[in-house]
Image 1 (cartoon, one colour):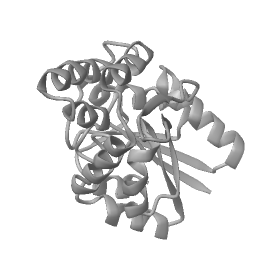
Image 2: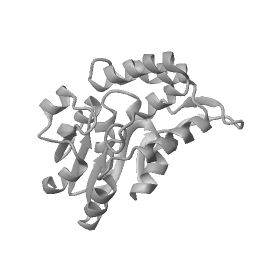
Image 3: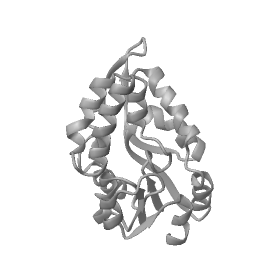
Image 4: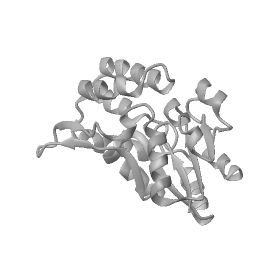
Length: 210
């Protein structure tokens, strides 16, 4: 088995799901949440310092998550589907490791032919209202993505693991993968660009690397 792990936001899609949830709450909330997201993605804030705070301010319901799911499909990276199809044909198993939300990401994963999504569950009441999130999930905190990589290695015993992503939380996986590929197709983060053994601006560019 060979695993190729993709971040979702600003990698498989041009959007940041948490920012799109905030956008549904108006421009003031959007600006506040966007700043926190950007600082976390650039490594200026710890993920755990902003994760619950952002959701508390947004309080996203089930319909909001579904709306963001549709946005993911509308903003998919142009070469993602063909690249993943090619990787699968070459014997790679794709999966998503994200600090985003499983319910919103699932439609995009289905579109791309990705069975496994490692992302945070949102909880809703019978009326669809927000009831919290899975605070125990690894990607709600710093070091979460490497933790998931190590768990996948223990569980699946892959021969090779590749990680592709745009943010500081993705770069944290560098010691635990065989190849880390920084992605700058939407946002070229200097810390990620500097620290990545390989850096691409289109997902199709990863094919010669693996």
